[in-house]
Amino acid sequence: STVDTDDPEDEGHLSKAYSGLALFGFMLLVASYQVSYGPISWMMVSEVYPLKLRSMALSVGTIVNFGSNIAVTSLFPVLIGRFGQGPVFWMFAFITACSLVFVFFYVPETKGKSLEQIEAMLKAEDYNPRGAG
Image (tube, rainbow, N blue to C red; front, side):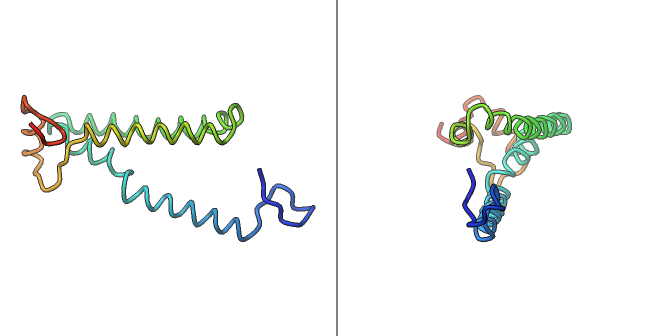
């Protein structure tokens, strides 16, 4: 869907006001992601694997991360064409909600801990990511 710009020759283009709002929204999204959820995958791989596996795990994590980016970027227009914008955005919202639940319940808090403390914590038999137990 497009926004009417009151110019019949300009069909399919956003007005300058809406274009600026869209650009601002996109910049806000990217900035918010980069200071919140974005670094989690990089921090997890660099902190939760033992030193002897860390370089391999970081390599695999990087491949999975960029492979996922390629898949989403490639499939997004196909999904929009097949199902429409609303269902596709709801699907991504659902995936995001599931990932937030995963992070809350399964990603350990490592703030203020050394890499050695994190490794010992993850090796403990009674390990619980939420700290209880």
